[in-house]
Length: 200
Image (tube, rainbow, N blue to C red):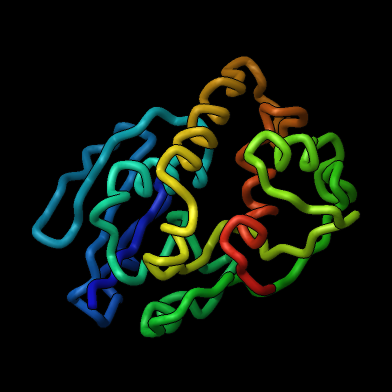
């Protein structure tokens, strides 16, 4: 069994990687800030444009490795501990899960944390059928999946979402929490449970 750790990074200190006990974990680092990071025997470095937050990096990894995925994959931002204080311990498990210290609730328009997110519209665009009026989610986009959890969707499914992020990205929008379809990365943070059947 192989285990992977996919990290979307911009500027945070990554020294915590040295504290990972399981040295067999394959680490994939998606760098979005042109720092002088280098690949090593255990860390594969890929440089990406700085857009789409963590979901953009995660989708890139899934698309590029669709036919060669690790058996268990952890997905995280570069500073997981603010959202998930026991993240290093979680790396020892071999099951899928959704991780954060808290659970939040959003309506299908992003209320109350980010009003203006067209969650229902986005779900229709990616052909996810959901009739509820609210979603519970764990903030921070930190989760683990088995390979088969990813393969329930086709590679084209993930390519479609990846292209939607890039199509609707607005480099001129400097707001902290964009609304409309420019907010797809924040929508994905909320709907990962629907895409992968993750329980809060």
